[in-house]
Amino acid sequence: MKAGLFCKSCVKDLAWLKQAIRSIQTNWKHPWQDTQWVIAMDSEAYLSPGMQELDRRHIEFRYVEPWPDRYTHAMAMKACADLFCHDAEIILVFDSDMVLSRPTDLTDLLRLGNGRPALMFEHWHSERDPATRAMAQMVWGAASIRSTGIVLDRDWMVCPTWLFWPSTFAGARGLVEVHHKMPFLQAVYSKMVYDYRLFPSHPMTFCDIENLGIYASKFEPHRYEITQMGLTDFDGVVVQRWSYGDL
Image 1 (tube, rainbow, N blue to C red):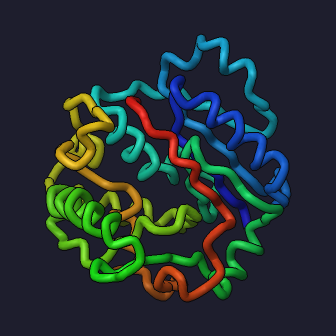
Image 2: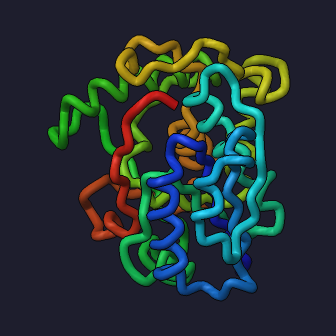
């Protein structure tokens, strides 16, 4: 199966991205001839000296013009991963501050989901990190209503091993387009500059992983292993290191 690896990054995150690339170059054991690895970069990165420090083997770099709201733009680009990894039959999405923690190939990821991508969730009332659940429900629940009109009934952004079928990306964007009656990128466009210090009050127009979780769980449940967080040992393949700061 042809696997896709997709990341959206920017100049600010080049130091994190360098580590992410190193981890994937070292630990991704799926054949490279069967892997399409695409990193979308904000356009100003093209001439950045830091770009020359990256190990560019196997990678296709695409340059995109960011929005004033770079946080939302990054989420929107990840929601379009299938359009960047157009040859892939299944796509692993990652951020600049994520690393592949151990030798892994696509078979390993699917085996951990009993032959299907594992789709992890947590209930809003869970005792696991209740402060995070409350914040997620407030911020991403509102974003879900704005973008799709659908109530976010659980938290899908709990495990950073984000593996999805291309049809899920297309279908998730379709939920937004139907709700807004306009093309996806127009519907979620945001010109409000993002300040991480004001995260709880930032009017998010969209959330990539929550949107994908909604579509996968409601319209393609037979294609995923839908599992509550903590009930399997799936967590830990991809580790997020949490780079905070202005985008």
